[in-house]
Image (cartoon, rainbow, N blue to C red; front, side, top):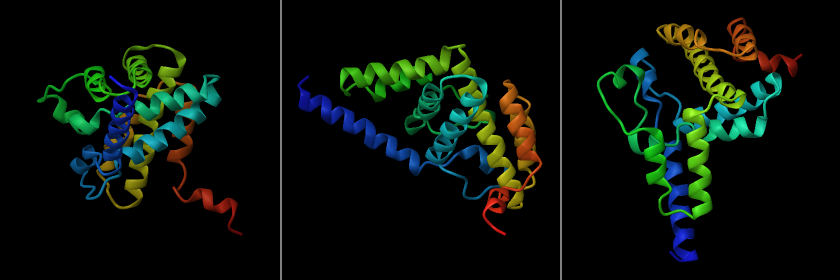
Length: 191
């Protein structure tokens, strides 16, 4: 392929990632949330949470943020299949989807993105454990916000995702989140 073709293939991948801004996290529909956050919104806060957890756990924050950023990118092609749906559907694994997504991208882009997804899916490093905790903690915090909005069935999601946390820092942040309002941060600035 030519440099122009690789550039076009790389841009196609970037444009595909834009779909994540419009694609909703469908699992929340099960508990009655009518307009749940997008996959991109989830991934952004997961990356921020991952960075914070990495700092607390002594892991590499940049690596964790990178793992978190790419952890759900395959959902442009297979959608956000909720856990209950996975019992009935068989989707291609995330590494296969990623390989297809970047097949026309610059070779360095293809190799880099595939390496990140492979590590998230198969790794057992501290960074991978922190990234996975960040994904769960983000879901738990989102559930707490939905609880405040009146979606009482979100409590099951809060409890089930919290129970899966592994790192001491994620557990400590979960405990703190469960004891405060989502608007608590404003009190620092409001008299």
